[in-house]
Image (cartoon, rainbow over all chains, first blue to last red; front, top):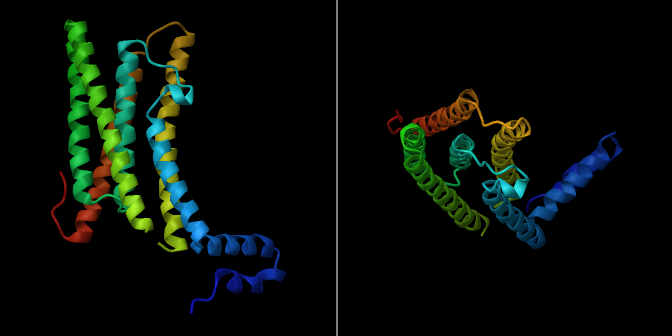
Length: 159
Length: 77
């Protein structure tokens, strides 16, 4: 039978850090309890939801870009966020390398489309704006996909 | 999932959120600055956001290549 983390760390009770260690040990033991597991799951799901919320500038008090260049910068930022998110999820093996490659290819395509929209805007603002709107939608869809996959795989891991 | 895995997993999620937050904060800073000065973003500023995306892409490629090495499959170009 496994010795509880609390029992292991209680021997440090006379050291200067004993309070911290015992509290940490209690926390670790609590995480393995049914309450801890359910709260951990809740925290993970909340984190996934937060990930989705991060994509919304308004929810964070970020000024909504009103100009074309502002929207282009916002689209590049979303692409950067998606690359980083895919990176950490792949490292954590929450998504497979193949899934990550598939997402990478789609973000690449979106990034290329942002470039095309920018070039088009100079000659034809309406068409450039329309192309950028399409890219923004595609990036939102990718965010939703990553959120859904993460949530699904998180629940699987926590069972 | 044991407690160590749970903590590691939460740490990874926190890192993900921190990275995403840093990008959004940078965007917010530039947009607010331009707005307060009553101007649009400059081409240089837009180029910085593109560079950030390219850097993030490079990092992802590096991760995928290291995962490929682990699983003995071909590298991603």
